[in-house]
Length: 140
Image (cartoon, rainbow, N blue to C red; front, side, top):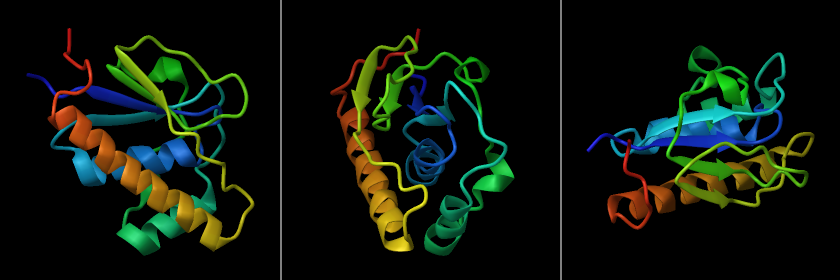
């Protein structure tokens, strides 16, 4: 079976969804393919997220990622929304869940780190669900 494709989605695709894409690749690339996107883009990934991901995981998100629109990613099986607090973007999928994460943009490093740790934990939980076949993820 092909690995399912997972899209991490928020409006601007600059912070939480970018962190999730990076951690999905780092922690679970053997189980699923990670993408991130939004309905709007920003000129660069949130610089606090970039700095903290380098410090915490030695991941340089700017080397492999950029802010993308939903139309720029392939069709996915699973959509994870970050908790947009506005109308979250919708794309077709076989499974969807919202992680309800607050946007740490403009907050201190401790708040950013809490969100990064939450995303790390949720990536591992998602990986386990996929491995156990608890989600409808078969590729067409």
